[in-house]
Amino acid sequence: MIDSAFSLVVSRLDAQLRQRFSSPDSMVVASALTDGEGKPVAAVRNRLALFLTNISQDTVPRQGRVPHVARGEVGATLQPPVHLNIYFMLAAAFDADNYDEGLKVLSSAVEFFQIMPLLTPASAPEMPGGLGQISVEISNLEMETLSQLWGAFGGRYVPSVHYKLRSVAIDGAGLVEERPLVVEPVHALGPRTGR
Image (spheres, rainbow, N blue to C red):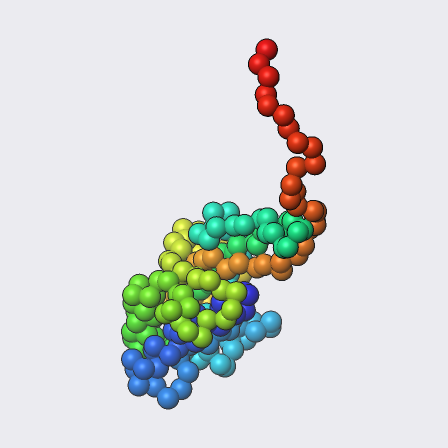
């Protein structure tokens, strides 16, 4: 589900920006800015790059949980799904001579998420099954944390915005326990007597 949710965000944003800027080419890619050796990735040049920065458990998911499900005459206990927050960086990896263009495209991307903060099957018909809804919101970082994060990703800062994609559910529907349901009482109870 992580890949499905991330791919959905990338494709929706890319479609919007391509339409807005009348671009025949992709404007958004899911990729780190540098490869394993620290060299720039050619696919992100003069595009917006989206890359994961963290994944954490959403301890207060927006969807309800139903841990017990009845199946015929057997009660089944299922593990509740794990709800995740996916943090990602939206970075304008534009050349120095296209710096202004990069800021313009980045601003348009921020505007897209401001207008469309919630993706549902109604607003995104291509949403894969199992994703009920996801929301995208800005995740502010302190300067020290931001500096450490960019250091971990190669050290070359480019204009960027940090986002939180919430709440992606991982549900393996793993059965934990089956037990018979009580259908009728074994012993008839008589009237209560007072003391």
